Image (tube, rainbow, N blue to C red; front, side, top):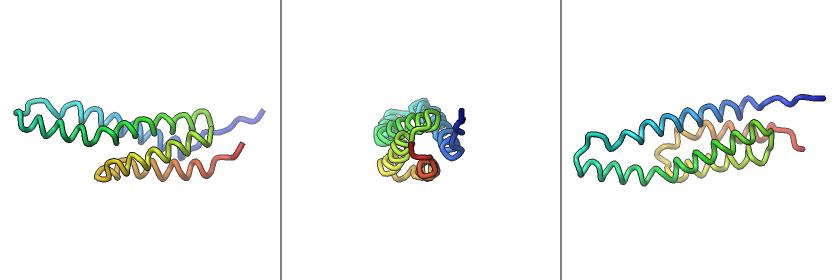
Length: 114
């Protein structure tokens, strides 16, 4: 019985993705504390603008994890594509998902076809 190894590239991508989500949750959960009404409106608008990016990133991390632990190429590719979509949805934050995106595409390409 042959044991398949986990993809190191997908693992690194998954870990960075989870760390980014933890950072985002802590950053965006504290945006409205101690602000006056105009600042709260601005913080609310910023949160609404970044939310599609964060939702897409959450789904990308889930698919990345499924591809990693289930060793399924389709899930790895879906995660890589979702990282790309997350980058397009909020280009200002590209630096937070570009490494995960690149590692996921390379990890997908190196996985064996079944």
